[in-house]
Image 1 (tube, one colour):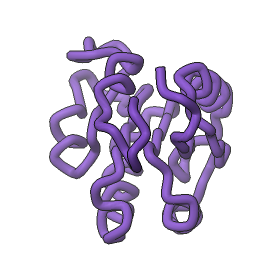
Image 2 (cartoon, one colour):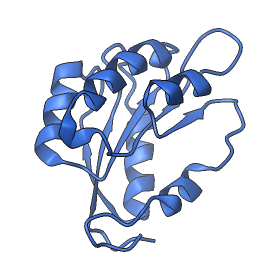
Image 3 (cartoon, one colour):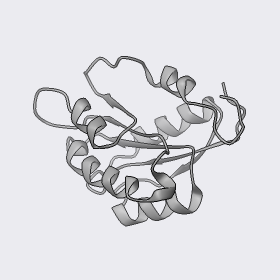
Length: 142
């Protein structure tokens, strides 16, 4: 567990109005010692980028359950990675990312996500293990 000096931003994509997934994700991150800014549902791309640039989080976590996360997620990660100050920030996406059978993990990692956690698709590591695997940031041990 980390010591609480890490910051995370939790958000959905612009097309997703679900919120319980964000509450759960916020609580999970707080249990791992993160200070969390929860941007809520239906977050416009430009607002997400603006908040990330201002807050400079140690982790950006995007959750989607409406089945359009892979589409909106590709657009969002491109905008985040276009910001020099966010290029190396770990960004994850998870939830129900599509409506068709199959996985979107490889596609989204290729687009720039650090890790993808898909509903119903076995992940190589779980989210807690992922958090523990993050490198030391700003001199604060993980």
